[in-house]
Image 1 (cartoon, helix red, strand yellow):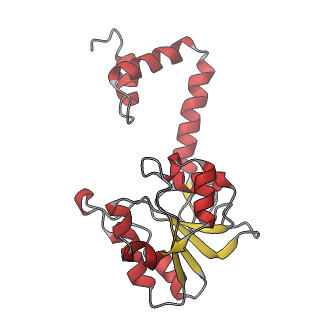
Image 2 (image 1 turned 90 degrees about the vertical axis):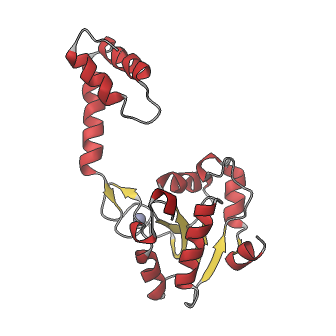
Image 3 (image 1 turned 120 degrees about the horizontal axis):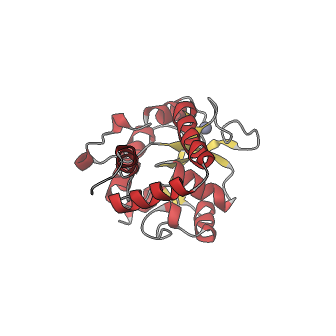
Length: 206
Ligand SMILES: [Zn+2]
């Protein structure tokens, strides 16, 4: 792609670093910004810079947050004894959208995947096990996608906590479209959060 401007080229190159954005799409977006009032580009770049500089991860559940402790963890109405284990913030958003879950979350930040070089130590697993060891937790709900990596991760965590006084459950399988919680429809996902099954049953049947 030949550019008449180095500035344009640089902007297109940066934009095309984003997933799913090829050079052509990047050029279209950049040209769109050039047609808009200057402020729009300023607002966009400031929002991105502020987000990157100031965003935090909740010290308790590791969810993305504007404060040291996120809104969900600091909400007195949430049941802190029920923890739903999810892969990332998109799952938190999908489950929150159902309005059916009153417990709190634990965001792992991924799934165990040897092929991708992700081991248990790279995920937020220890802090979850610590909460269980402290006896603060009545129930752990596994809500990872039903893939091999999801199953491996569930089972790894289960083995760490099975000797403690905690109930482990999983959201009803077969709920997800494309195996991702974020795409499941709200009614179905909400129902499966309410009708969870004991975790041992879920893997003995497989
Ligand atoms: Zn939190």
